[in-house]
Length: 155
Length: 397
Image (cartoon, rainbow over all chains, first blue to last red; front, side, top):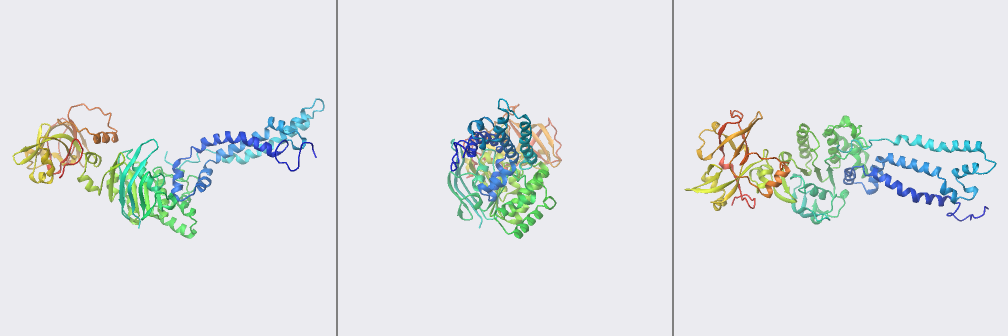
């Protein structure tokens, strides 16, 4: 068992949950602010119309609002993914144990030594690390469109 | 049944603004009630309180006999048509129409039956698969109506649904809406700022000003018997002409001095307005509608005591009538009501060139008057209106 790690411990150094909570602390604030602006563009009349039609708060949110803010959800998800997968500083500090290192920290480790740097492996690893991001882009691209609320209200 | 009763309804916002003051309104089952007034008068706020989109500060609201003050909108069994249509843009027309029914988990066959009926009624058949952004304004408005109709609610609420349409479409949709309401016989509360819509569509019309209900009655009654200066100037297009005059007694008759002219009231006319006798020697606000004045050359046997002399400043030939503008050398009526009317007509900053009061009369099309002519205008004294210049109230009893 690696030093400093406890099998029953789920939070703290060298655990994924620690990183997740840390990243959430930053992302939640910024992304909420980013998405708020977009949510504000949804006309209030749509809300009220659905309310009078008989929708509950949850039905309005998931059925009407979320489909219309799909672009910002896609963008936020993408930015969050890119930021997290490339994040180095915090991961480097909190993940000291080689078994629990993230991709970014691991790749850094390949070229951080003094003598036996493996640039070939590093280059190949960097290329592979780009694949998930590109794949996600391809998948989310069709949600990043404008004019979703066109036709809803006069104007 | 589905009556809507507003009992001393008030709406006061946190900043102290009192939008609706002690509103008492009784809408009978199946009635088409129009709530009309200048912008900012509280009519939309009142409608939104019926819909449950605004909280009621005080008073009781009843729909179909049940008190609904704290009931949520979905339980009130109402349907609303918004001024901006508020269609769900990511759904097709068919889905838009059936949204409310799908929420209530209605049987699919029933949903289809109702949706088809609404689509047929509003001729939306070929549009069912389109998205709202592929529809014209009139089509969107009909989809919004279809969405309200399928719910088969107790009450329809309509918030200025025609104000975003162009003039011709508005006229057509006006009759469509009236026809639909008549066929379905659903209690309807319709808010508008356009008094022509109010007059043509409503079974009864309720006029509001600054949060207070001014008068309620059927359109013709409001037109013929305005209770105050605001009502007189608001209902009717072109608006009623008003000037300050003096009531005098000449022998047995009452006369009204209007600028340089003196109009004699026939005994029957004076008898209809017994309160006028107490205004002898005092100023009154005189109201004359434009269709109650005529070119003297077209009227046979018009007595001299019902004529005004005036110089025509402008003529507008409408084809069905000639609208003439002239000036009377009587003072303008200036009260809070007239200021409110001016504000509503966006005429507060219009400069007034001559002294005296501008009048607008509607002559028969065969009149031969031209701008600049010095003409005599016959006034139908039986249809003159009189108001107290201080309180603004009509002088009757």
